[in-house]
Image 1 (cartoon, each protein chain N blue to C red):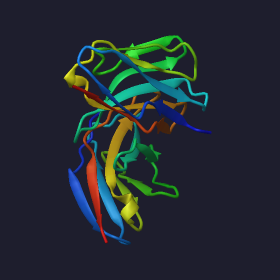
Image 2: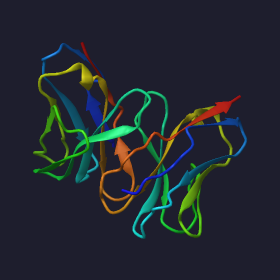
Image 3: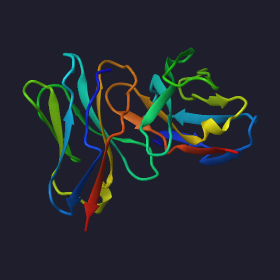
Image 4: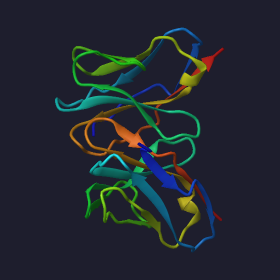
Length: 109
Length: 110
């Protein structure tokens, strides 16, 4: 799987938008961009994924650069419950997900 | 649906003991995975299965064994436990798209 680069940590104020960046300059044409998050003492949970177009769901939005070499996960209004480690993962087909260290998001009340 | 369930939640083993971590999913998923997560690190793949009777090694398979006799169950066996196997173990399953994770088993080997 192609590698991704994420900042180690980010901080946000509660109720403000958060933009979590991910670089993936070696992405292949068949790689989907997946985002998972891991709340403290829990297993990872799916957030969103996309291929080329921007995607929205009830949890977040995913903005994908036109050349697909970077993407941004957008949390529209951060809450304390959004404090977690966020993983950006490239994956094609049904190969296993490969996790990096992710970005630790802290939310300040 | 219960999703992915794992037992036990916690376990302390002595060096050299053996145990089986249980994983069950009720979503009829063909793909199942075992990961371990050491403190401050991301998840590392131990073994995975693409269907009943089919298993394959991941990144860190040494010291572990798996079997997949049914679609629902994917147990992970530790033989001769070592302190290096102290970790949190996550089981996961998927069919297409979203991968579902269990709550984890926290294992300490002393």
